[in-house]
Length: 274
Image (cartoon, rainbow, N blue to C red):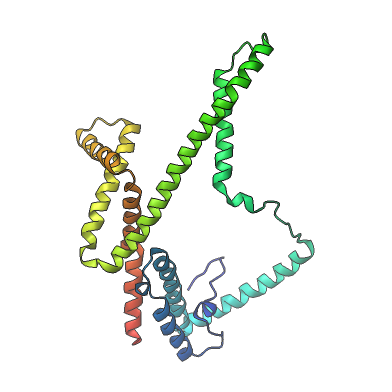
């Protein structure tokens, strides 16, 4: 097995065994981990995703450590990497400087900062657009106009930015709900899963064609029809479109990654009689 210049993962830590563990101990650890983290045991999309990745790591670790030759090659590589890491750590110790971040927890409230910066920027742009060009000739008149316009334009800017943030949060939350709903569909309704996936794919395609048509201005009648269908979907179900997109990506992830991982884990588990 070739690892190149990148350090290999700590397969012993992934399986929870010591580097001196026997083949039986490694097999037993693998069996227990596959049972514990198998994606089919979880309902939510986030849990399936997280534990699907864990199972993938466990399979990779077991396939390396169960074979005597690949395990010896891995152990040699691990020793080289650890020795080099210790030498580098010793060199950095004298010159390392611990830097404390100057950011506080308020930066976590991204909506506050986006709203404030967006409002200030939009207000400045509107003032610049409506401000008289001859302000230096009549500075008093320009100052009065500024004082009269600034509060109103600031309020208009705030409302515009607030609406953008609101709809953005609505879309994000709808997408998250769609991911969770898609995970529920995968768990509860597998016989009809392909049909639902195709319907959601069609919705995503038509809505995407709506935005593409407005940008590229295609003249193809068929593309215009799909764009029109997408416009109808947006018009009559705007709130539900992010949910459908979330369900689509949850199902797409399942068909692209999770199903393959589950099948692979199940097949390998069957070989060792889990």
